[in-house]
Amino acid sequence: MTRPLPTSLLMFIAARAASARIFEAVQGSGFDDITIAQSRLMMGIDPDGTRLSVLAARAQIAKQTATALVDKLERAGYVERVPDPADGRARLVRLTARSHAVIPHARAEEDRIEAEWCDHLGPERMAQLREALEALREVTDPYR
Image 1: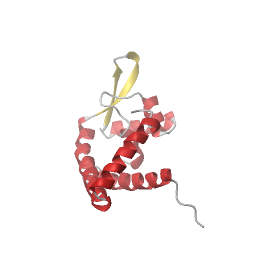
Image 2: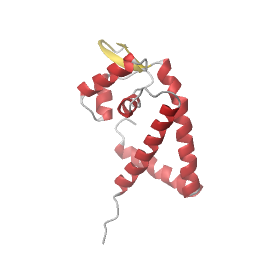
Image 3: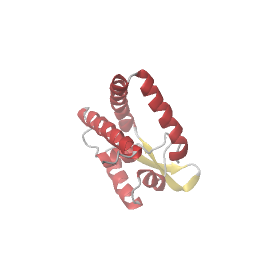
Image 4: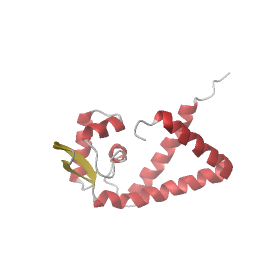
């Protein structure tokens, strides 16, 4: 008898598939100088900027790795480092206009994925899935 896959793994499989599609759509839109690791780091940047140590924690990578990724993103024009208004000694990583140009392409693919999943599950089950995942976020997302 085979053990059913854990719910967490099922969620990971769906999230990984969505993430791959969004990444491919972004690359297909001409932003082919971003790596998947860089894109994951960029997803953790707050609208007003984020400290490097927080980005590393969100991406679950070493600070040195985050620094290398941010250095490359900065050279490519996707992020900039700016003084932290809350602490003059600290710096924030902030998205630039170039990175904001990526967002509509990512959002469009997210919308296509949502529509496909809704077609597959049906509107009621899709609404139940979203409701359940939003409830789980209360106990799983330290950055909500």
